[in-house]
Amino acid sequence: MPHFIADNKTCEISDEEYLVLRAKETSDKNPYQSKAWTLTARTLFPQNFDVQFEAYLVEKNNGNSKEAAKFFGELFQSFIAENGLWNEMYALTNALRSENPCADDIFLKNMFSYIPSIIQRDILTLTAERSEDTMEHCRLMLLLFKKFPQNTSQLIIRLVDTLMTAEKHSPGPSVINCYRKTLVCEVLPLLLQTSGELPPKQLYRFLHKSIEFYLAYLMSKSSMVENVLENEKNDISWELLFNLIKMFGNKLDWELCSIFIPPCTVRMNILDQTKAIRQLIYCLTVLFAYCLYQYNIALYPILENKHSVVLVEAFVVKEADEILPKRLKIDPTSQDSNLPTLTGSEGTGDIIKHFNFALKCWNMLNSTDVYQKGKYSNKFSPYLFNGNSWILDFITDVALYRGKFEEFQFNIQSKANNIRSNLQKLTYNFVTKNYHMLGECCIPIIRQIESLSLLGNQYPSLTEYNTTRHLHYLAIMKIPVLQYVVKLLIIMYWQLLPNFTSSEIDRIFGYVLILCQLSWPSEKRIVFDILTKIRNKRSFTCNLFFKYVVNVEILEEFMHMYANEQEIIKLDLIGTGQSHSQKRMFTRGVDKEEREDFRQLMKEQVCRQEPLYTLIIQFLLEEDRHISLK
Image (cartoon, rainbow, N blue to C red; front, side, top):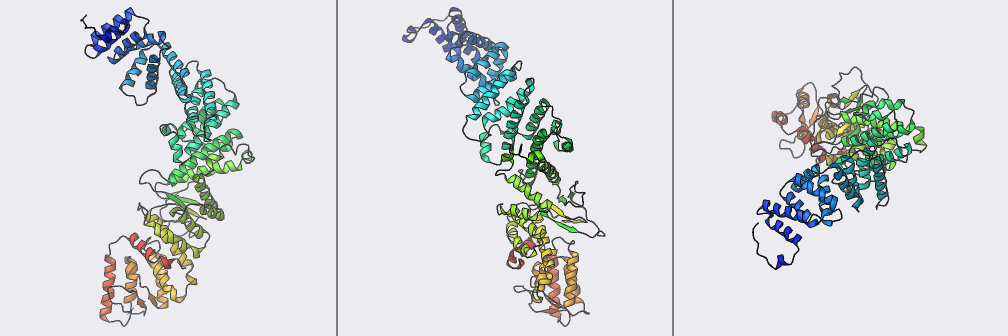
């Protein structure tokens, strides 16, 4: 053994401290020599904690997990009262619970695996009992249950009582808290898996608390809710709720628990067959909440580059002999001729399914006698109805679907003033045939179209054939919204045509010609009706013609009208500000220069390259003071 020169420090310490000091001094330079010092110290002083703990630290620092486990087990059995040991035990249990372990945590986890299982269990039990923090105690007990699930049912019930008591005395009325989350997401599943028979009353109490928590969390849009459980929110999902209800259902001998096997909505027909009101109410409430959630996710997608949609009244043609266009996604359940047909663009088929399933649950909930008597109605209502805009969107759409238009209007009045609510106001005036208000409702939408970031595609058709009503999930994107607004403006002008004076009729004809270009050729019939009326009255003035009419077929019709020498039709199509001659042009008697001007203007119109939708938007924005007919 090397000779050390004594100094004042070493002369004042005990033999045990001297040996520990030497072991520490040589640990970095010569680990074998350090181990020799600790072995000597352990042999000479077996009852000294510092000596035994230093031997453990030497093995830990050298990365010897098996040897370290042996020393730690001996320390636990002989020196359980030492604070230094408890600090290491806390570090060990924290490492066992760590989801992102560091190097020290990985070593401690590995070391723990070498400790005899009976000592492992005692370590976790004593650490949990010593913890003064309720959540820390619960987490350690859960760790104990997962590692040693045998004979733990009574301990789990005690843990349930602990969490419920802690929640009862916690500040704030919200059910979204760490105690309820641990109870519902971690403890109750263990209880249902490991325990034997439990009283039904107790099971229903636990079931109620579980559904209450999941609905409060999953149905809330509040950022405050996310902050409460920010690090654990990934543990909360509809699938976990369904699995939990299945476990409760098995304990309670429910006949409906199979409905929560994904995809749960496929088995909804069994709801019509049960007479077990209590389980029916629980299942209906959860299924309704789930469908309502999915419906609103479809209305307001959270993924980037996904567009929102809004339910609007679309268009119906009663003529059976029409050549039917290719249909869009159609509601498969709307075979009853008295029900509206539901359609949506590509990719919106799921929203129709979720609406139908939510409506089915909604109808059943509101037609169940027990529910109407209030025996269960107040259980989960706060999490579905109070301050929840999702339910407002749903019942607004249901009112439109059922034709309860005054209820529909009442609901949209309480909404924020945005393009969605403005489209709903527009559809209300359309479906109630309040044509004088259609134009006024279009103005704010026209001004909001430019702010939409997504362009979208034009629908092949917004019209259904031979049905009572047609509802469509309209994509809130530039082109689809523009298409819908333009269609309604055309309908408005055409319905109010008899009310216009002779001095106004040409302006309206011009507006309709410009608007009909967007969905060409679906509006071809209206255009030819206008051309017939122009020929009948022998004149037409439209100062916006060469600014906004670019459709080749419409231009060809006016060229034919201009060149037809058998008809004398006075055309004034050049407005103030045009670069060409501003003289009036007639189909007969005009000079050569005027004819060349007209032909040149027509050629320029055909060659214009700007997108048609931008031209129509420009027209609507510039003429917004006039299109409302106010």
